[in-house]
Length: 203
Image 1 (cartoon, one colour):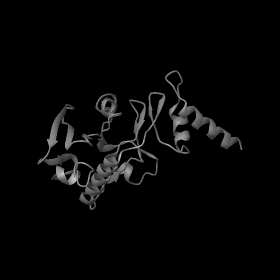
Image 2 (cartoon, rainbow, N blue to C red):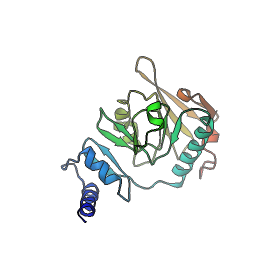
Image 3 (cartoon, rainbow, N blue to C red):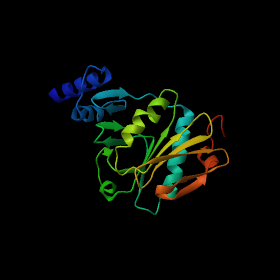
């Protein structure tokens, strides 16, 4: 009964969290494992995640399928939005829409978070776009294994692609209608129309 009460308290703290209340990473993880909804964690603060639109879900499913097929014979794993990325230097836990890991330290690891993504993809929404492009991207850049960060627009056919070069500098490429999309870290190449297939209002 005491364990149950502790779990209830953790969830209550996470749900009612505000900027004046610090939550440790350990408390966050313990609460998240039993919470009915997902939360992201940033520097001691916890933020509940909202539901996604149908177009968001279709884009995520399309990309997960395409990348899984492409990487079927490789050691890499394609993970959906149920896995957290742990950013140790930034003290954050985020749920990217798609993460690709190829590091052997991840392949047989059973943790409920990953540490070594090579590619992270976020589908933009009106409520999260500024954060995904700003603070979240800054936090993601602290991950030493990350080579590419991709932002997918859900209301227009447009993809923002960021790649880190050998010197650590990030370059940006915009893909639009008619373009072939390249995720060079995993040697993926395909038409942008394939990624947007069956997306409501855009198909």
